[in-house]
Amino acid sequence: MNAPILVTGGTGTLGRLVVPLLRDAGHPVRVLSRRGGRLADGVEHVTADLLTGEGVDPAVRGVDTVLHLAGGPKGDDVATRHLVGAARRADVRHLVYISVVGADRVPLAWLRSKLEAERAVAGSGVPWTTLRAAQFHDLALTMVEKMAKLPVVPVPGGLRLQPVDARDVAARMAELTLGTPAGLVPELAGPRVYGMDELVTGYLTAVGRRRLRLPVRLPGRAGRAYRNGDNLARPGATLGVRTWEAFLAERLRRPAAEARGRAA
Image (cartoon, rainbow, N blue to C red; front, top):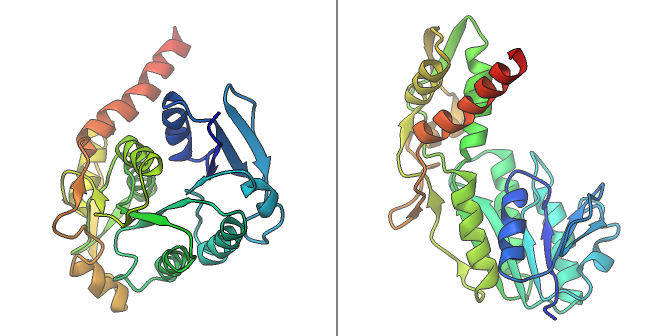
């Protein structure tokens, strides 16, 4: 019987996609979260708080591999240090972490937290693998949806994104988790780079809306980093296959179909 793979953030956007892939590969999975979850074949749920460290040691006990997907707007460095300590004490053989493209180049607090988390993993003494991924299509959609609710859409000049589909990231994370420790691997991003105006245009076209747009300038060092493309994947990165346009066509078709079903 294989030892279970511990997955933090297993109930989130990425975790919900990765866990079935690990199960399909024949591995039992233990999902760590603060609130637990529903029972499923081959999946157990444990409760722990990564930010305080409460319950983390028992959650890690008895696993050989830890896949760390949990993250938030702040505190990722603290949470990761708690997890790293527990993994070291439990003699974990492989610690896999997902970070963000640009964590080492864009001067924002939440990215600095990601970079410190990377350093905690690399200095843990536990064999490790870290993947930096670009922003998910889901996050880009949330952003442009909020912008499009305004009568005039602010469009940051020079801001470019290379959004990647969460399913592409999930497949890569499962592959890395089931492989051997590889250190910092090539970044993963979407197949195309888009200006912010292109992302907004794609969304407005898909939902059949029109909005006036107002170019704005991102201030400070972070704005300069974004204009320099420091948030974009480096040469040699792995590229996903699903484009922003394909994601929008699929995602926005579902609510429309559901609405038609309710009306019928």
